[in-house]
Image (cartoon, rainbow, N blue to C red; front, top):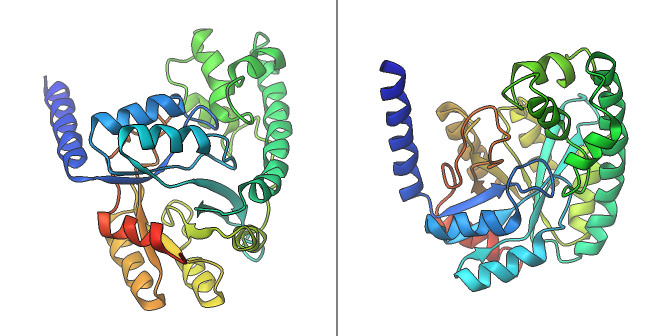
Length: 295
């Protein structure tokens, strides 16, 4: 009973959050590693009354045109974007960089396509190792589960294992044991450096924003990139950023004159913790500054 009350209370808290948040600038769809289509995400946004939405799939802008069309239909200001996977060349740490409003989308996508191809090879190599443990997980099966995506992701390896009955949670303990960075079947991936990604974003007329700094302990890197002029903003409000981290990041934004963004990092069912659309975001003024930046 206690657990049930806790679930109800959590649900009420999320509903309350959604009622306040009008701008969600970090979301994903089936085009990368989430469970819902662009159309379903836009319909969800319409139902909860979002005014601003950014579809920021990993390393792809494939959903941009559909999102813009549906945004116009639903009266939602859609901000084009993508979440670029990078590594800091000095520390080797993972850094996710949101690139908003690229003017040359084709140029940016050409840069991102290299990562999509590398990721596909990496994940198929990981799947081959998993197949040694679970023989029914064939490459063809993984490809079938990834048919709507622009690449192959962890969920396309784990969802088949769910459907085969080996686990009841795609993004959970078994995934950690098998294909997390410390998993028995992990194969390292190849990603551009953060500097290369920042340069690509700049050359394509985009706005570079460091995402969820707490997840990868990127606080010092945010300051370094701001000093070097590599980024124009920082994602302050994110489910994985603690209250203390949000305060720290906001102070950094004020110090260097950075844009402030926020978003739920919505993935549908493919998330370790529930992150409903609109559960985290930014103010209308912050979203407006992003849409007006460099115009």
